[in-house]
Length: 162
Image (cartoon, rainbow, N blue to C red):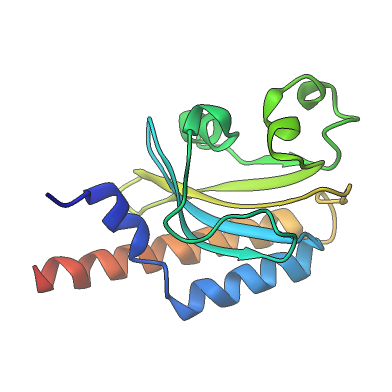
């Protein structure tokens, strides 16, 4: 029996454009970890990862979605930006930053052309980062749109080969 959600996530595992986007995300934000994740009601699956801080994740790895901020993003389809979880009131007592050991975090939803939610493009780092300036948010939103197009392209190709 195949796992459809896992298969959807793995469509992006070796995509070169996604690799370049993750490189750009880390360069732009100064963060050491970036990922594209397939996010459902009960699963967070890493589609592709750039891990320069030994966070310990690779493509295909899963997290309990309830322990992630991506679950909140899935529910609201809005981005989250945290410069320093220790200083920002909303995030100071949230369990996720402490659980995963990050101070800074940015994540944008990946919304497909039919308006369905696929997952997130996220980056995190154990150090404080200024993520609200230097065009970071619009760049992340643009990257997310590009990834949505790649997901749809791979989905069409996959459907034709089945």
